[in-house]
Length: 129
Image (cartoon, rainbow, N blue to C red; front, side, top):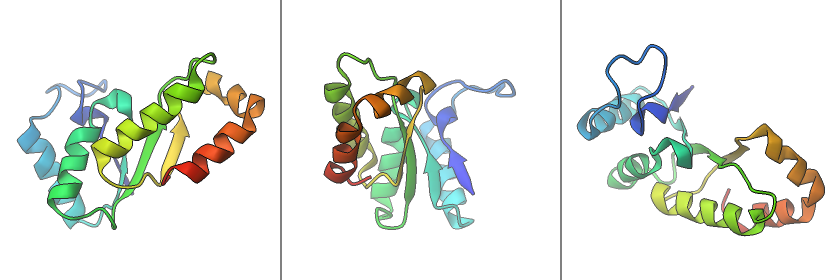
């Protein structure tokens, strides 16, 4: 089971009639999810939810138990060697613990893996993902 956190950072979803929850409600949702055994959380820099999720993790000392899934923002083919590490550093700082799964969010970016496999191999070795 994975708890998605997109609604923690923005008004999202066709059935979302109440908008983004309050910080207090987000922390309550995270606490209840944790209490019920959810250890996996899906986030992304573009969701705006990484900071509050990281605050919850840090406040409860859950860095070693949390399983995080996040995404790389769309990579511009001309500057991905700078933008991808910067995005990872930002996510790691916000979340306060390692990232277990890193998705490529934009399907158009998958060609970069074929174009520059060494960069992505090094990325996996250089960052705690």
